[in-house]
Length: 476
Image 1 (tube, one colour):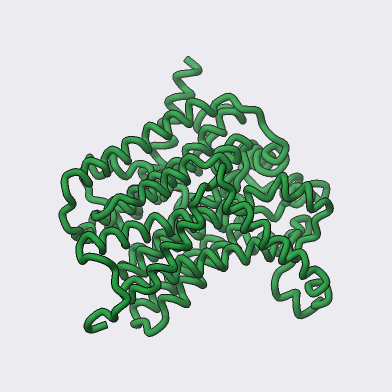
Image 2 (tube, rainbow, N blue to C red):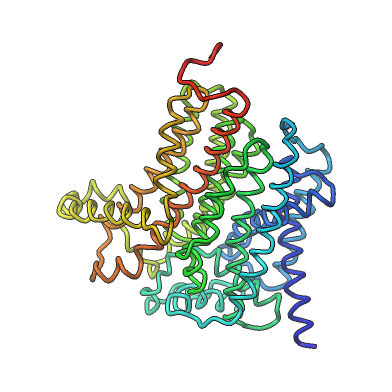
């Protein structure tokens, strides 16, 4: 009977989170209110549900409101009802894509079915893994604290003795973990790894779903498959770390903003802002990468932009800030939550510290480059992304979206290099072996999402109009 209760709890958890995400997608006009459309969007709806529920729960914790099983249910139902009512009051704003050839339609369905099987296979393979040091001391420690007390108890979250476990790290993954344990009615740190895999696989599904809606070429399947089968990402999930969770939110957000730059649809900007907010609430690195992505989008999109475009990017940035602000304010008032990486504005108060460590910046950027081109991990993903993006800069009609992905990737890589530059690391050689591969996950996901979208654009254009041309577009 206990096994039945555990299974029922898991089903209920995923139904509720997915329903919240589906309500968001319907409200934004992504999703038709038809059973088949809902089934095809289960992965994206689950990921969107986490993105919209997580910040709300973190806000309650920061305000001192208890977040137990009942509170989780109330917040979830409130989101479903609120967003669902918006979606029901207006029809979905679905763009009309040109009809795709039958082989492309079949391939699209095969890809989505493969993603579903991929999730099932991964979950079944990851249900009995041991708990690693970082998971036990950073993530699950706080997840268990929230599970037992429902609050940010001072004995954990403001305890100077726990400063070594990065009390400044955001709370989205611990909040998810606490909710997971409430759903199954017990603590099971090994089963939790399967849930993290589900989050990662849902992000892969989301990328495939967003791109499959565009019609045209399905060349994006290749880079999406490379991301899905990455040994680095899989290894991070098996350790219970949060790097993959953060990276997939950044990757999906980058794709959403790329779609916004290409199409001008506000819903893509809103979705991108929500996903960036989720990334910021997973890890501090998510803040750095999210700033890189939003700055790239703003610089590229605002050049000669209409007032509507300016409002869209301001809305996306505002959503991300609103999602991140509660935890950042909490950390700013928490003496035990020491930040290991100095903020950029400290350059003005202690410029000597930065100039003395310039060699670490070059070493960090070298590490980023080396990790991104490791054949056993990412194959030719990053080089292919750079080739395709730079090539599309010649096509005037596609220049903005290509420039956005290039700028986001470059600024994200600089962000990782900044971490090497200013963070005091004791044994840098050991740090690079242990931590280096996961530091570039977010940068790699930006490249993967960018390459997938740009391939779809390039080959669809070629199919419709012939070879890409660098000649000006008439009337542009």
